[in-house]
Image (cartoon, rainbow, N blue to C red; front, side, top):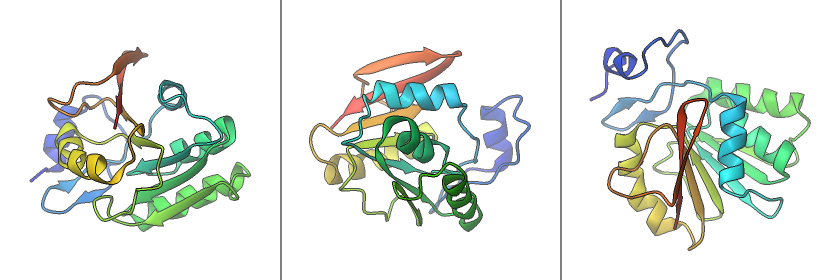
Length: 174
């Protein structure tokens, strides 16, 4: 089971409140917002277009979902189990004028229906990514791009890995 103390040791210098996606039997993944330059790089690495449907699993305050809609023209869905994060995400979408292109669902990411995604974004821990991998491979169509900020998928080797401001971003294709 993850404990906040353990998570803090993984993220040195973190000064943000830790709230996040609860993973059944594993504890919480901290809510730590991705910087805008990392989000943009993730969506570019996935070659996101207006024809895509982007799903952000553990969407937090909706930054990735909103940028995918606003800057890339993609329809987007954010999944998060925390009702406060979903409320923030909906407010952020309203402030950015993209409510017609985005949806947010208060849901456990392991229970969410993600089959419509053509791009999936993640900012979870490697252990969670690895646990999520069978779901991604089972439910997503061939060619769907999966992009992760900071954390890999264990022995599933990425198609590409780039650094943005010293932060790794990984790309896999189903």
